[in-house]
Length: 111
Length: 116
Image (cartoon, rainbow over all chains, first blue to last red; front, side, top):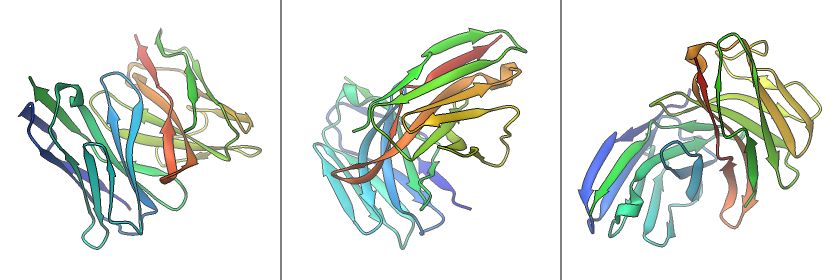
């Protein structure tokens, strides 16, 4: 059974810092891995998608990596801004299209 | 990307009543998923809504409590039946759809349910 874990659970940084969020999964037989952003009380916004055959994806200040052999993914945020404050969720997708989510990292970027 | 509309966006309901949540997608999709997010928790899959057949439920979720309809390829409903305060959660529908990045999961804005 796939289990997804995210660390840290919460992170507070000053504006401008670069930061890394970690995601680990127990079953390497994933279809892809997705990173989402969730603002309080809102739905999910897809940030990055990494196919199982890929190693990383980049979008603006965000870079996500995937290492299937070690069951790990990281989300790197460069030059953080207060508007980046949100909960970040990673999810492993199986062949049936079902997502298994981690518990999320609550990020706070202080001005 | 798929545009997914959920109704209602929020509701406060009395215990013992039922609420039906609607999910409308702007394109035809084969599979639709319903997730629950309890307060302070991550998302858990409730069921897969299949067009033309019964929904497939995950362990811990049953049809009598969460009946699902999927009348066509763009629409689905989830009913939360005989509600109790423990059902207070955000309910989200999701569809996988092709994008330049691959098959990506898109989510509606969610329905925030409070049971009193």
